Amino acid sequence: MPRIDNDVKLDFKDVLLRPKRSTLKSRSEVELTRSYVFRNSKQSYTGIPIIAANMDTVGTFEMAQALCKFSLFTAIHKHYTVDQWKAFAAENPDCLQHVAVSSGTGQADFEQMEKILEAVPQVRYICLDVANGYSEHFVQYVKDVRARFPDHTIMAGNVVTGEMVEELILSGADIIKVGIGPGSVCTTRKKTGVGYPQLSAVIECADAAHGLNGHIISDGGCCCPGDVAKAFGAGADFVMLGGMFSGHTESGGDTIEKNGKKYRLFYGMSSETAMKRHAGGVAEYRASEGKTVEVPFKGDVEHTIRDILGGIRSTCTYVGAAKLKELSRRTTFIRVTQQVNPISVPMQLRTKSGDSRRCGTKSLGIYEGILQVEGPRVGDFPRCGLQIPLPFQYSHHSVYWRGVSLSHSFY
Image (cartoon, rainbow, N blue to C red; front, side, top):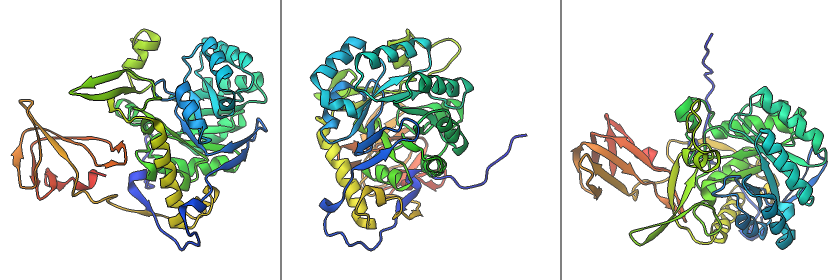
């Protein structure tokens, strides 16, 4: 029988952190480095636990070179050859402690992973990545990889519930990737109706993992540094970022120029673009569960890294956490209906005829077409866009659709 879970589940956009009395005098006093010893591999880790996602438009060797300078981690995408790995290892030996080899669950993936780890034994991390971590096949694959590589630290996912976190940890994984559908170029929730609000998923999965001395990664759903801080506050040991690291010099993806402005392609690894590139197309029995977007070129990723780390340090000073380790203990979330003041949100009106105009400050009345809302930028990070079917009414900086104000959606 179908059932409804009436417990409220929340996303990053539904909460803010409550400030608390602090003895810190400056953001510079905050220590972001974490040290862990992993349950199954017994290996130790020290670094700032932010991970570039294993997408071929994010998890590149160039990204790893940039991130390791800040002691950040990169899950390298699985489409590099063994020779490319050898060259990277020879030129960047200091980066190898901050990267993971990624793999799917196919036999070819397993064999490729073996060859890479034999060729570059300094790499001690494996990222086993599938969209649906609930299958028995995946659990068995984790066991097989653990048996083959008993001393490597294994990241595995993705899942969103405590019982599956426990299952994967007991099967040999050390760090569980948490998140189904929150990514900016993921359409799983739209195509399948399956998912879980990311903040609640992190809280519940962290509790399950920590009870077994395991660890979790909050994977997806972060749009700005504040979301990264919320993920850590919710109990995540690591936070994995895709969209926030896209569009940079070090990112993968083709560069496109339109009207004198540069863009870089960013796409989900279950998108039609990715499957055409790596699998010859979308198989007849499945649907694409990702999309392709053009991200405005952001320049070197160093500036984005500093913005993220500065935001987290500031979070810690607001709640009185001298170390990132203390953040979750100092976190109290408060539920909210609005994140930021929407008064300066730019809105683009596209009519049925395809005309485009920027909404002004006066009432524009009733229109037919599509209202494209481009959320406010925080630093270099564009917020998620929103399309509203028309007719709508725009008055005094607020959009009303079917009699409901949508201003709170422009967070």
